[in-house]
Image 1: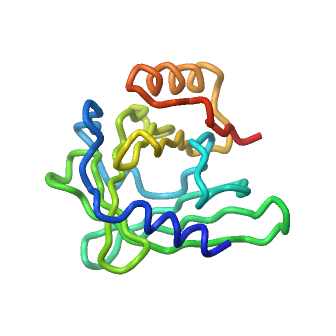
Image 2: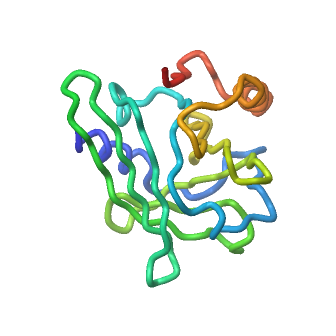
Amino acid sequence: MKRLFFIFALLMTGCTSAPEGIAPVRPFELERYLGTWYEVARLDHRFERGLRDVTAEYSMREDGGIHVVNRGVDEKTGEMSEAIGRAYPVGQSDVAHLKVSFFGPFFGAYVVFELDPEYQHAFVSGPNREYLWLLARTPEVSEEVMTRFRQRAAELGFDLQPLIVNP
């Protein structure tokens, strides 16, 4: 399962730009974003295929960056898979646009394009419209949040056909 996160790292390398037409949230308070986030929904990808109960944990690094720990359970084996990475703001720190790396010097975009004012849920894109996540502080969100996520993602041109919503 670790190879799936390795594939994720390779797919995300080299592009730290936000997708055209997708604006990162501003103002953004990184300190409030730290902590554990649960993956509520995502577009399907090989690097996460077959994983459930996926979480992302963010904490500060001594160099001013963010320590990233992604975890998920393999549905077939029940084994935990983990990937450890680092992230840094792209440009100004009050903009929700980060570059993330799980593999050496290669970084990919992490763009929060909608964020609850209380930092309870976030809509996140990667470097293009093939990467999309709904993250929340709890494993479940209201139907209102899920509907908003689907509407906003569709407005921005994401193909929601392969969307996986965690049970």
